[in-house]
Amino acid sequence: MNHIEIVNLHKSFGEKKVLRGVNLTVKRGETFVVIGGSGTGKSVLMKHIVGLIKPDKGDIFVDGESIVKMSKKELLKKMRKFAYVFQGAALFDSLNIRENIAFGLRRFFDYSEDEISNIVRESLESVGLFDVEQKMPSELSGGMKKRVGLARAIALKPEIILYDEPTTGLDPVMSDAISRLINQISEKYRVTSIVITHDMKSAFTIADRIGMLYQGEIIETGTVEEIKNTSNLILKQFIEGSSEGPIQFI
Amino acid sequence: MKLIRRFLNSSIFFLLGDMAIFSFEAIKNIFSPPFEKKETLKQMFEIGVSSLQVVSLTSLFTGMVFSLQTYLGFKKFGAEAYSASIMGVSITKELVPVLVGLMVAGRVGASIAAELGTMKVTEQIDALFTLGTDPVKFLASPRIIAASLMLPVLVIYGDVIGIIGSYIVDVLVMEMNPTNFVESILSHFEVWDIITGLIKAVSFGTIIASVSSYYGMRTEGGAEGVGKATTFAVVTSSVLILVADFIWGKILPFSLKG
Image (cartoon, rainbow over all chains, first blue to last red; front, side, top):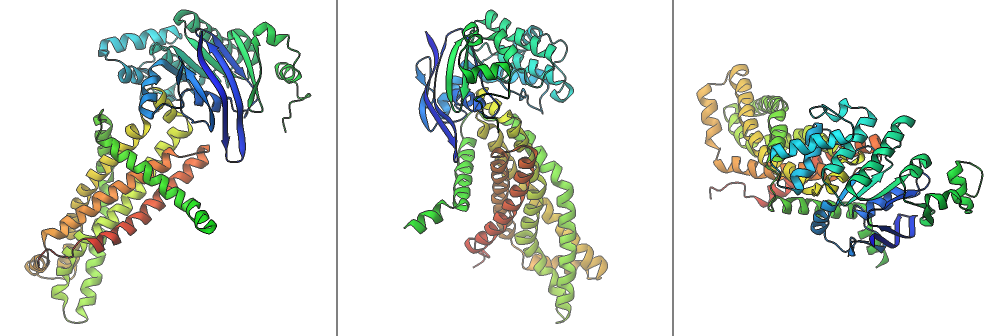
């Protein structure tokens, strides 16, 4: 059963056409990875899914309901089902780690302070962080911030988690740790996940299916094995990380 | 027709329209629950208490220099005894509200635009939305309430300091009789002068917070974008304060006494 369906999505910024008819379906409980070069519109696509950007044309359905046609109020209510892990973690500078994670809990639920403390501690422990509740985001390393971002997401027990470049800017060991963590979260909480990345090692570790975004369209989708054995020259060049091939990078 | 359309679509019209829609939404949100009490109190402290120093200095020296010039000017006609009478009116009605507004636009407006601009470029504003929170309601509305409540308080404080500045120059430097100073100030002064200043202060606070929040939340392009947003916020707020001051000057009656 399709959990998320993107139909003929178009978006331009001024003269620049970023999305030119994206079609995509993501099944319930599936981890779908969108790969593509820098500046190809992966983050723009992701922000459409939660209604942060309105498309010029096309629609997005979550559980059969159109995200595009929802009012701001309805969208904010719908966010209860979502969690978004931002590229730079997007932790609130002025709040400590506990308050960062508790923020969404206070907005969506009527938990007592004791319950919030327990959820915050459990969420942090599940991403391998201990005794950081009272620290400020500026006191944490990049990898730790990303893990707090994950903890903030899972604390809400969402149905859908969207990951924006979860391993970008991390060292290879930390990248692998984050990829494994995403796998664990998917299995433990049975969430539907959409991950955008250009880190192929991470993509192959976490994906059930992979789709490549190129020149504003999804040019191919398939399982990890299908993508590895593709005959599509663009996809092949991207996976191999070669500068020679049909992808124009200048 | 084409020319008119192009004129209406020009960037200044788009900007003013977008700013007006943003401000209307932020002000409308003030009256609908949930009320962001904690954030509003925090902003009231930020805007009010933190501006005391700059308001004190501005009001004191404005009162002093205006008193000095008025005294010397009136002395040419032998009318120096009346110089203080103009002080009460001009300080409470015009000088302090406008100068406090401009100083707060510089201090608080810049701080609001820089803070929200940084939140925008680091995706914290997007994060608020995905956590079920309307960013305009959570960030802009409390700042508008706080600024429009705290500006009048700062103006009353500035009025007192400005008149003290005037007293220092007239009585201590120019050796005017203290009783004459007080009598002269009270002779042409009415409560309406203070009320006029307070009405202006509320509108200046609304302008500063909504314009600065607008530029902050529309920031694009990293550190450079934050810098530009801060500059535009201060310049636009300052210009709009001066325009609003003139409009209030035309709308509000000069005196309520006949």
